[in-house]
Image 1: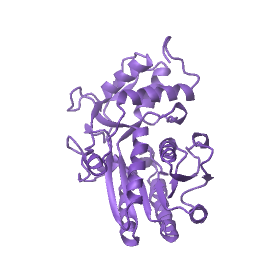
Image 2 (image 1 turned 120 degrees about the vertical axis):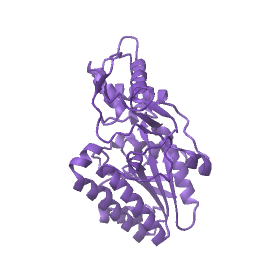
Image 3 (image 1 turned 90 degrees about the vertical axis):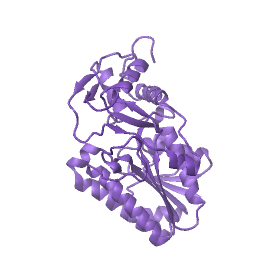
Length: 331
């Protein structure tokens, strides 16, 4: 098998490349490097700079590297930006996926793994979200991921591909500091950013129907997420003919935003009390995955907890933000 990983130089992509290479899989990466960094990747992994929406490039790479499976990670993924720029998100996430699938079918590639999101569920009202829960996304980002799932499954059925859709919950942490998330878009880096600037972390809403009034979320270590990609990719590779596996990737355990803020303060040594801001529109009180399908059908469960996520993310933050000053005695 040779796997093409689109967006393979990004935060999640680099971890997926690392997991698959460590397991002996052959990989090649396409990344436009708008967010990706090639120095995250091993020297022996071919990295082609370009867009996964470029049909001519895709045709050449699929043929030259004799690609037999694709892991599609490249996408626009900022919820707020998707609200401001829905045309961009539909063009990149849906239009780009269409071009990629056309190239995959033309090249005779038989296996396709799609990076989806728990955003497809919208604001579910249930203790544990199963894969059968209604999908009612509330923003263009979530909509493009749901449409992407439909398109992947339909293509698989029509053209004999084995397909998988991984619905990620909240991804955090780093397998190695140099692979850490360098953006300030997710809650843990946002806490780090404010704390290291001497500002209190912000919590949006403390009057939700949860034990401490703050939103509850399911967090998955990026190294576990990468391992899940490997497990599902190998299941797809062993399958002859069409069939889809859609699974949640989480831990099945909820952590409140207040609990997360306290853990970040403990690990970083920055003990500023969080500021409470008004609720944000569209935030669910609770979003925790049911992981029964992943554990029952593939024998896979996450290994790492939230403390490992925060500690490894902090090491990465310190590496990528050398101007950061940790409290004395902490690193």
